[in-house]
Image (tube, rainbow, N blue to C red):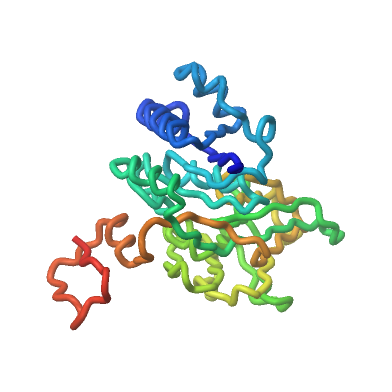
Length: 312
């Protein structure tokens, strides 16, 4: 007897186009004999506009997380990050279908949604593992007071606009520099096109294992973006002379207050994030397409690899 296939559907339930897409995906999964699953909050919100969703299995109530085969995400990068948070701790990969604007983490666009769902049903996808961050906050006494993780970035920021954050940066247990700043971004290659990019940090190809460290508006001569080994430990300590508090943000979703003396320690997580991929990896093409980069005049290499496409 074939075991049931549980596919998590994660959708932004307050957008009309996303609700319509969720309806199509759920219908296609039912037709293929798979069991669609919704988070309890998503089920309640979608049931307001799609009554049939009230009868769909709820994650963690009707179906345990470990039974989820894959998560189909309908939305932008924020919704994909939410889905990655929901399946954290399981082996389920995340497949993003972009319903937003940039959608850097998405694998397909809305026009290709039906094909993407068909390939999920056929198990015609590969899984790519992305480096994630393990994040700990320690008190001035050295006790761990908060633990979380991040796929894109962990950011130490000032809590008040009018006050600067005074920090000291440490790499692998050795002090590097202290300065006043608006904050510090610690990003993965996946997050290098997000906050890190806006802050002037380097874009890092996903295949490169590294961590970027980018000070924000630092008052210091040595406060340039750094790229460190993925095995490195990066620590940002809020100095006691700081007036007020700082705040830690991870992926813009999870936060924790940082009083003077607090210490944020960031390392590579032992558990990567799994993304489902339908297309050959071509990060250069993704940069061109998502950032609308001009490539007019490119004559092409002497020979293109088999299966490669010239960016349009």
